Image 1 (cartoon, rainbow, N blue to C red):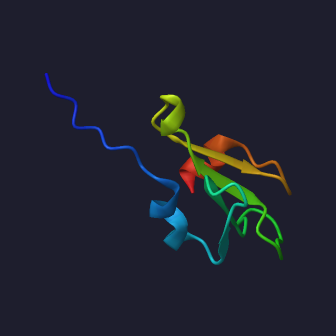
Image 2: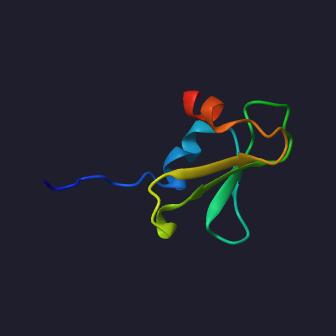
Length: 73
């Protein structure tokens, strides 16, 4: 059975957010967090498929929103 899974990349979800900037390490992005008042992008979104995982890694350095809430967004 062939696996046609294509990993979702961080850049594919940027249109969902008001503002973003590329991370300094060029492996992801910071976006305005929709879960708290955020003037500077603090929600980190990066690809994990380079480590063998096929998912996005998401973390807010401002409010610490949990992953389930983000996935339901």
